[in-house]
Image 1 (cartoon, rainbow, N blue to C red):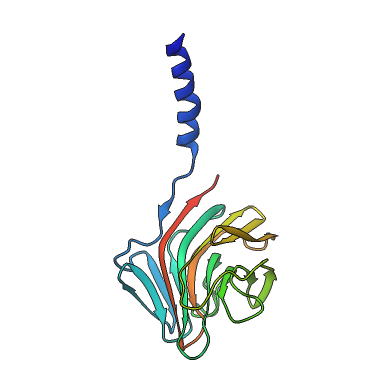
Image 2 (image 1 turned 120 degrees about the horizontal axis):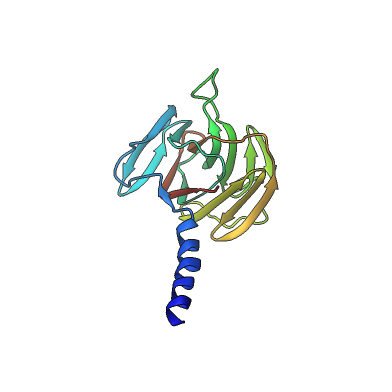
Length: 196
């Protein structure tokens, strides 16, 4: 009888563990293999983190996903002209201007405007309001995004700050933004997992 109970526990709990999607790295911590640079920003790897500065641009990761979670650590620093960045998802380079703003969703990273870190943006438009500004210039923070079908949720510092429903963009890439010259964005510990 004990063996039967043990086998049932292994089947139930082991099966649940196996069915959980596993986190996959977006960034290897050493170089930009698997990433594509668009625009004028200068991207490099320093001390195990991605850094972008010097002009407007976007750095795209290779995976194309539909339903997923993505997470990472981020920091923006104002170098004299305001700091504004974002984590894009379900995004693509515009066909008519690959160096332009991505077509897709953006989890905003900005501490100096009304549509601040955690807001959901669509191209040029703040769309889903974040409930609180939890970030500061020059400080690392955790951000996580979950997008399943039309449900989009954003967490900042493990606090859910934005929930929104929208189905305009169905699938696409992840990207990191340098919005303007005179700022720097840094990112590390970047992972994603697909949700079936």
